[in-house]
Length: 430
Image 1 (cartoon, rainbow, N blue to C red):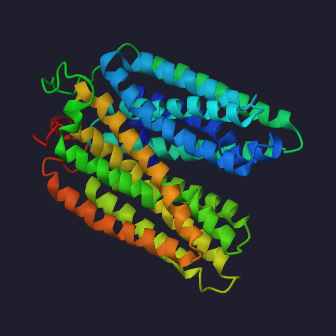
Image 2: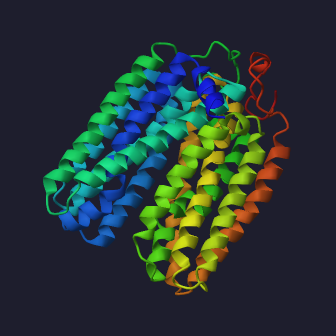
């Protein structure tokens, strides 16, 4: 299986492999600082904890704007220019955190970085989708996610070695390293994208030609269903991973260090599962994979629900297992959802489709922590797992219904027939 995965990666176009490499580089930088922002702001810069966590929300809110703006720029200007701008803005935003002194400065840096983060999601997804189709497209998104997790994991280890709350300079160097990673990754990405703005394999489209804004995209009913599903899934899943799940651990009296081991298990599961089984996963219909994601996250919440009545000694193991199971859903999601979105998009509107998709994800990442916080605030810890587990269970049925509502979305093709496929155009018409 390992050899098959390596062969699948080597079978991708050189441009796509370069984009994956660029994403890996930027992920190492992200890992340097991602686990430490709240700690850095509260312990080093003496920002109140409520304000420090609000900065996280500011980043998510700003990304709702950044994604659609970048999507339109990709379609109307160029992917190359948009990529350069997004990566430079991200470097400026993260570098700003190194020099914050007041809460206001932290919020400003969060706004800049958040806009760039949303823009980068549109840029990465569009860059990944333009040179590959069918099974190769699913493989590309899967391998990109593997690289992202390897990079974040490596960066997290390096950050943990150098970060010290007793020395503000250590954090400044970490944020400088993150900024450099964005600039380096941006240079690689710009070179990989080149001056080519359309995929040769994509048929020319008349739909939406000259259409202003996102009107033509939002008239695609199939895509609107995907956006609703995306937001819902983010609320019950990703929106809780770094907020409500650690919060649940804190209020139930479980040792907070358990979360460190849980995230290690999460990363290892993602890398092993995708690297070992990517060639099989990419042959499964996206809707079935999304149902699998929903099922994995429902199981995760079931395991967390059992911590309420479990002996204190067993609770840490249940948390680690739950976050590891969550990783299975992540691995399936990384292949299925961006592949489905880009299967619905014509090449002329690919930037806008990915921009809207990025915004839908960001909305879910804003609502998720707010909902989780309210559920935890009730004092009934079981309520969080029960409500979100029910939501994830409903998403299983939604995913399967979605698969039936998108009859024109083909199952991924084998490499031999991949060039014969036609993407699904806006509105679901083949």
